[in-house]
Image 1 (tube, rainbow, N blue to C red):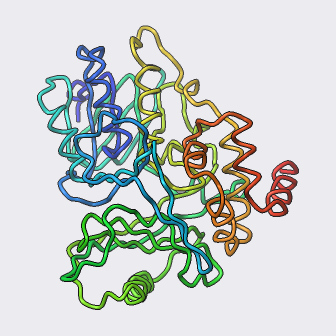
Image 2 (image 1 turned 120 degrees about the vertical axis):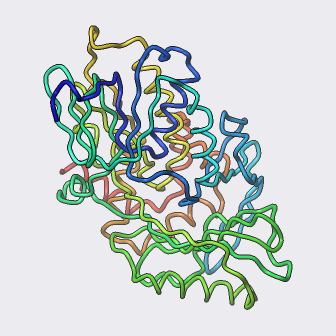
Length: 390
């Protein structure tokens, strides 16, 4: 292809997942990018309900219109106890992937400066004054590139930072009898057999007869597909559920690591989403973190152009919560069987509101101390020594 045929944009987003779509949507809302050309590239057309996002919040956000269900109560359980958690002033929210995609695309589709192309990215090459992007069909250039295509090898080919996976299989099921409590989410149920891992059930009941039932692990190795589904069947039978219709299935694996993805950022390329370390390392939660980081990113790039270049390496800021996550992941990587006892110690007597505030990285040092002191001491002391020595 002749270089004169290569189309140029101010910004290109490689990958049109959660982080990219949140950022582009907020760029539109800001009203400060209408004179900037923006290209979104993704091999997936974003026409399927391929995932479910959950998050807690105190006040309604810009995503409130697509929240399909809210809960004010949550259940935490293990083999020895159950605790009902009053989440107020928080609510636990569920958003379906397809609802999110439709909402964002509906809002950006009438923006003449934004283009979405269903193309697979094959090449990214940063040059002095621009970034070159190749797909299977075309070639493009841009002033700045935002990449959300995750490269597993970056985190998994090193051994300085532990890497776990939050991996899961979920069934959306419908019953003939009324079994579920639609007012309470089963946040973590560790009563399932642990088998040397950190394993729990996660249930989002949308009515007395419908729910998403998910078998989840925090561990370094995935399971055979049938093992996830067998465990879901066993759990449903334990609840007295024998007859049900499976409406939809979902599965996924989210990397949990404190690996410094931001070190891959360059002058004109910024990694975002999972590829940029936006996933909360200790929990695998993505939506709330991406919501915060995308707002920070839009503010960061407002008013910048090729004539006022800004190195993308300046975007990331490491905080103490990154270090807390590193300690927990170090423990779970070496002693994956300790997950149930660690989370149980937090939720058995801990203040649920304070724990959620801590996981949102909004606590002060005194509040951090209150949460951390609920955890078993010796594993964290040993992890602290290991991390310091590294």
